[in-house]
Length: 457
Image 1 (cartoon, rainbow, N blue to C red):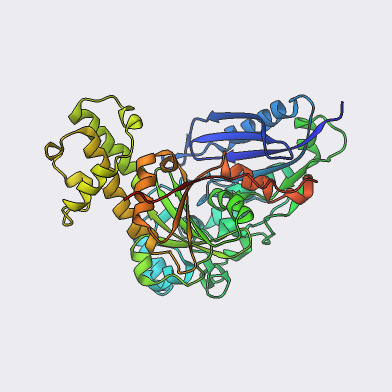
Image 2 (image 1 turned 135 degrees about the horizontal axis):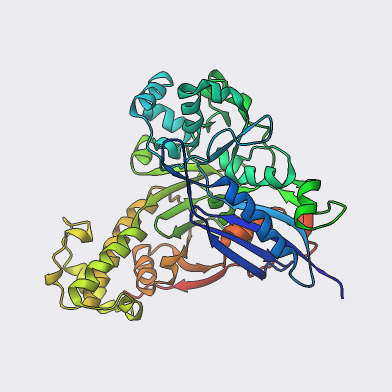
């Protein structure tokens, strides 16, 4: 029986490490996941354990290779951003993989922005809010200033997705989806690295930028350790930043302009059709731009709504003495929504400020919680919305919340609002970007499932 061609995708999150084996129709053949213990850097701050991650990759790919009646034709990567691995001349990391949440020295930050035009001008040029270590370029700037000897040892600095590609292929490269995501490295107006990258000799540490659809061949020693073959036939992708990877199935599936609200702990509104430069007002309201796999800017706005929802829901659970899953059984009630809107206190914008004793029931209070979140979501999404947008897609946790979806449809009466369902969007995006290298079939037309929400009030 002939083997089925397949692609293995390593989807590396900050907490969960996942692997998926997809067939040519992008159906999951096999999957696995792990949570790996963290290490600590030289300052005692938690960080990714690269040695453990490397071992996990090899062992998990061995398991993947044993799946019956499949032939792994390619491997690609989707991984969290804002993280650099600094490789020495001997191919060994020079530093730990620093945590992007690690506090950044205030004095060094002031020195940087004072030298390169001030926070506002610099942020507008690089589409990067001032985020400290979350701006990955600031991590290598810190090494140069605080430890110049170690900086001199660095041959290549690779964002995590490209490090994973290098680990299996031995080919160093940079990728625009990693460089172009709030890194402080890219000048969006000039479409090239910012001047500081040259002045500080950081440019020498970055290998050439390659297309996200480029593939390499697995290096012989990895091939023998994982697949036990004499000839290296498996193709290795260059990897993508996970947010950019998750957008690919939507861009490939829909031609009409849309906004995607990707909901989780953060609700991130993304508009791949808004090519206008970031304004000072947008930056101050938690907007940013990143570059997609085609090198085009995607304007985005962020809202901490998933976290707020979960925190306030626990407050409701305790006050009304309900189980943690009680809210899942609440149906959308247009009558409650109308009454709450008519009696709304517009001076209070945050649910945390509301007196729960004013609500007659958990159901009423929960509707108000979601209404307050929607009010904030409208403000956040409107920053990046443009006139040509007629459709709004929601994926992630809120896409499965009927009350949220109905209220969002009410809040955007001039738009078609859809809940979008796609299993493992970032992993599928990473597979799709190298489609032509391993897959002879056409893209499936129904890879994204949509449910339309019509206004009821």
